[in-house]
Amino acid sequence: MSRETARALVATGLLLSAFAAVAQEAPIEGIWEPDPSRSERFPAPPPLTPEGKRIVDEWRASHDPIEDDPGKFCQSPGMPSLALGGASYPVEIVATRKQVTILMELHQQVRRIHLDQAEHPARPFPQRNGHSIGRWEGETLVVDTVAIKAISFGSVPHSDQVHVVERMSAVDAGAALVNEVTITDPVMYTRPVVVRQYYKAAAPGARMLEYECTEGMWVEHEERRGIRADR
Amino acid sequence: MDCKGSKMATALALMLVAWTTSAHHSPVAFDTRVTDFAIGGEVEYVDMRNPHSVMRLKVAAEDGSTTLWDIEFSSVNLLLRRGWDFERIKVGDRVTCIGNPSATGKAEMYMWSIKLADGTEYGR
Image (cartoon, rainbow over the protein chains, first blue to last red):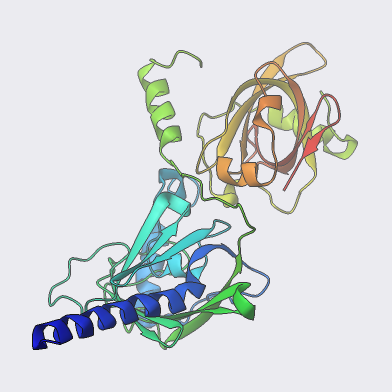
């Protein structure tokens, strides 16, 4: 056997090992439904710092709770709220060698967890869901998320300094998934907050639905313009 | 008007208030302490959609006048999973809507369950 052939065989073996690893990690893949009966809640009231309280109070003082409801305008709360259950809507996890993708039915959100990046970019662009990198510790996926855009509304108001670490693993012989979410935000919160979110494996045949959210806004626009035929 | 007895006075008072076209409200818009508020009428408009579905209900008073009620209810995705058959809730149907009344005195409510003319009921 030539040296080149031996190298090719070794490379092939490593590749097969990598795919085998993904196959072993498959327990977190699939469709999962939030299980509020087992899940913990983000503390209410949250442990706000004086600056955090000032930010939240300022937002509340300037927004009417009915007329200025962000949900009315299909605003996704982004991370870290998305890691805390997605309301009553299912999530679908797809794992490949380079990326774990979490498809969330609520607001049709997509989280991309990069397994092929050891570090976050030096200057990641702030976005609602931030920048996520992940690694496997056995069958537990550990996710580190930064560069989350600050928002002052919702159940988890946060600054752009928020840092989220998640530990996801299948439990109960694959019947459930638990995600231990640690939220650290020195601007908003006096201490790291840990919340364990549980999911149930969806029944066989369950499917994700689309979540188009702006149809109502379009209808109201048509009404304002007087161009809606069926109203 | 098909109102539960104890809610009749409240419903009549609310009927005097103009309805709004706003299609999605914060939960604070509704009195969640009351869960069995019920009102019946004819479906004038219905749209199962996200983030919340909407219905406009034509409610007749005993004096012959009618009021349009703005009914908000759950997202189309969750209704589907709860088994609601949208083919059976159409314009012109008579239905009874059950849920939380408006917290601000408007002719609005948040519907948690619906009863059709044949007695079929869809809920949470």
